[in-house]
Image (cartoon, rainbow, N blue to C red):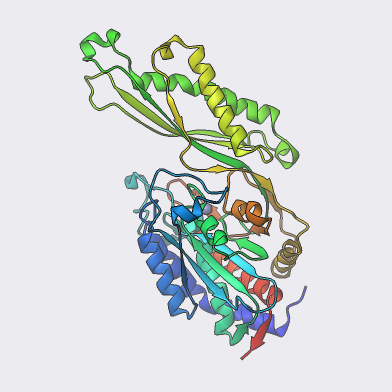
Length: 424
Ligand SMILES: [Zn+2]
């Protein structure tokens, strides 16, 4: 499809603001915004939005209010003083509200010495921008904010409602996106620039976090036989959890997930315990994540995990005197499929075709994103469409620089075709 003259002007403006978009990604990466340390990135993004002339509202996460919602995920940390950033253009104007949503939090990158350079000191090499968060997903956040800026800088005013959301706690609970929706900052269609490439994100699985803790019997190692080693004991629960994982993959794969060998993964993500090499450890705990199929409820998977641990304990005399404690301390997020018939999806595909000359591929994910909040809150349509990244949640995470430019251009085009623009 050929571009109109206005669209060509807007795309030229996107190219114009692209160097600044990249340096904004680097500024965000430098803040290293892991859970509990999001303040610096919030400050960085709030300042940038303001300097671009965008209105900014802080959307708080007060537990008393947020926890009333059934989608609230109870977490053991305090989020009372945290907030998300929202920029609303023309909220009162007629027209369907377009929402862009991106998360600012990143996952830990330690040990830093595994990286080529420190993960909070971004660097560019061979067309890639490196650093924790460059891919997941500060590259996308920069693209969505600068797409709006590119249009305004080209001398156009967006006159229909558009909302930018930059949220926290996407990587652990989804409570940041929920807070935005709960306080009325939702809309009619959402685009999330998660780093799964310029494809149509078509479904995602459910994700559950759980923590198992266990007490042992501490004694001097000289009499180890009279004690109970919590670290060794807690590991006896792992084979049972893998059997549950197998069951999920064998019995519950359906629809698009039939094409996957193993979409629902268990991860023993953190283990902790003991305090001294010559003492039989008195405690151990394990933090885990398990994927589960769309259609299975959070209560169902929680019950399955609980039954699984119960069963292992019932069949293993090592657990006769002390049972482990199970807690659900983060994600309890159900999976879902995207409504691909939503007109916003067709418009996005059309923009993709205009730029690339081919249809975007569908993409079914084996993890979760904040798209879930929009889907379950009030069935807001939407998808993820973002840059190409490598090594997200790993070492030497990076984002492909040209793919950020593409997303910026695609979003400029999408906004110009979804919203109404007025030449100043
Ligand atoms: Zn992400």
